[in-house]
Length: 178
Ligand SMILES: [Zn+2]
Image 1 (cartoon, protein in one colour):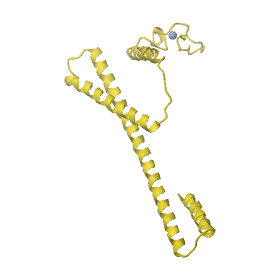
Image 2 (cartoon, rainbow, N blue to C red):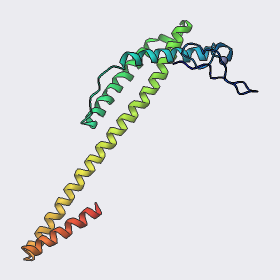
Image 3 (cartoon, rainbow, N blue to C red):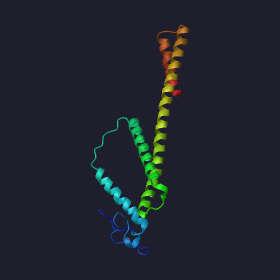
Image 4 (cartoon, helix red, strand yellow):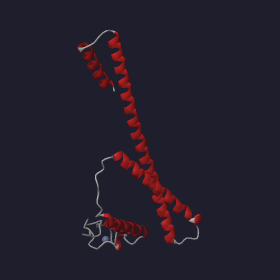
């Protein structure tokens, strides 16, 4: 249910009993009708409407987070490119009415956020890629060391349980250092 205006009396601390402006937190008396508050309220109402429209969407479990992350990053790139296109379409930013200017400014904010999200997403993917590659390199190194130990054991004529024992010790040491 909707809450009453969140403003409180400075003297008594009692909460204002009026209804807030639609989409806002405070009533007209407490600044709810200011241009900033109105703009914010419009945004809240639009977001509320969008959320209501999507709230019965089915979700599915993510089994491959890396692939899902790549897909999201791909969407982010497309999204920011489209925003940029829309901004470029606002030719010279002159001769527009207030509503169009508000739309333009909102586009720029969205674009900045989309840029930041895209950079973060791509950086995360790059980092995960590096971790994966490092793990592969470490595995390859360990395999090489084991091979060298095997060759040394064979060369020294050490076979059977003694060779197994030596391999097991080497394996434990490699796990400790990796
Ligand atoms: Zn109030």
